Length: 458
Ligand code: PHE
Image 1 (cartoon, helix red, strand yellow):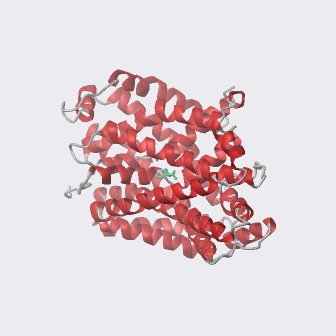
Image 2 (cartoon, helix red, strand yellow):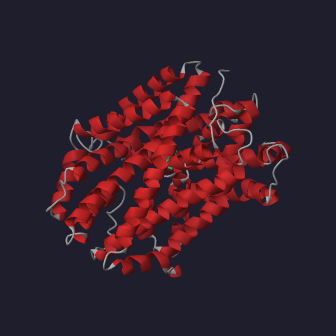
Image 3 (cartoon, helix red, strand yellow):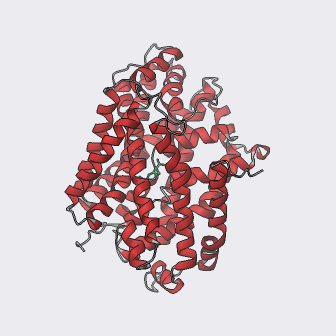
């Protein structure tokens, strides 16, 4: 096996893993889910899911990765040789591959919107204009492809540079920029004249809004947002040093990811309420970020257009940075697998991943244009990739990871890994293994059945 690089510092480890977690999921998916599931009450349920499921599964991925020091498929082969468990890792690699083929499309849009914001293209437009701008851009046969390719290449360049001088160095550079942008945007948004309604919405829970679906949505969102279930964090952990405190790192990453998601709410809702806008069911995903928000930014800052301009530019740059730190982690899951299992160099493996995913990415991109009528199981290529990855493969992956850690992995070995061979205390080890054995597989199983429409909770 080729010698493996390690992350150089503890800060690098935390920022790289947090970079993977903090992404488009935090900034567009979380606020809209919050909006549609009753605000503060949803946030409380979400945080409960992070604590009960997210943290234990993240710790498991870390332990599996660092113990085996292999790519995510190799990891299961190393820990359970000659068994079928390696399929968990292979499924993860496949999931990463699929996510890469559509996530990068949206990542490319964030580049176009940054360019539009910088060029002040939003000025003096009506709500109708924003719809046209978006549909003309996303449906264009070439433009979104170009931006997507730029995103692929940026990711590729960082990956080829390697773990320390690529992933770690750029995470250390980009994550602080992301924090600064978030803080500035939160400040601008909460100081808007009618921001308080938005704040009430985020801070005053209305528990009557919680239904079975709220809980299920929150769980699914927690997985996607923490990058769990596909071995992304397992792959990163295979580069952790021996003295990295796995439990502490998982707590930090979950904390940062949740903080940024909640802050995204503090950026979006005060502005939305200030503009007197009612969120529509159609405001999901792309349309909230690329159609509704430009118009809200415009309206909110109509008295101070320059602040509105800076706000929009920073917001879209924030999305670019968040997306890029996540795309590198998705690329790395597949890359590490191809490099180690196919015995290629890092750069050769990276070209294989970039080349194939870019090719398939074209088709997900065209789902918004000339391929919009081409449907498989009633879904466009983009929707199919998204549905399969986030609704099926991630939860299945997460469930299998908890079953593997809870039932198959030797508990002495697991404890040795979490305690760094006895040098750290492992509090609540019994609770942790209980969750992995029983609670996580059951809870995720329910989410899965619900999402597939095979079972309706409440
Ligand atoms: N966690 C990322 C986000 O919130 C998405 C992601 C999923 C990244 C799976 C890596 C793996 O946007």
